[in-house]
Image (tube, rainbow, N blue to C red):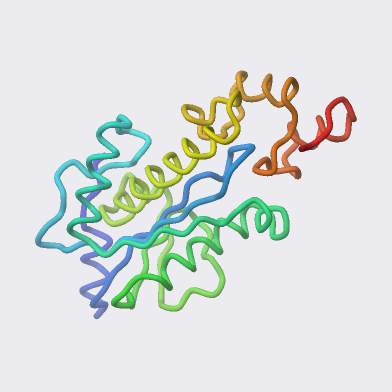
Length: 209
């Protein structure tokens, strides 16, 4: 399955003029923000090779993200650990999606949302698309931009907190990351409500710092 413009064309046929694709990345990691991107493609200048970001190599993702930013309207929003802890990860991801949509200019009048849950508070009509990053070119573009943006941020954080492997695991619960949690402790960027982090804190074996 390759993404195409079927969902966008259906929205245009119903009268929508500006259709945005929205996706988020980073619900599963133990550290770092959850990140959402909103993308409005120029239907006459769509970069070749757009696909679900998980199906692309890091190098290909990076080059496509640059091409998307050069040809489309793009907004990226990071929602940090404090908000993830306050809201819970699902609501934080939905908040990132809504804020990304609000940042796009000109404002979309329809949004295609990856997944099966409609975020509350959207500023326009929308449709959820299960596995949308594999079906809709706009959502695929958003998945690429969000993944590249969050991965880059995690590389920066890895320089501030070496040893956790964030530069290549992006904060996900790899064996290396979990071992570093036990050996090095919990950083301010760790999600304390997530079980592997919470368990270490509650065991009292290591102080948070």
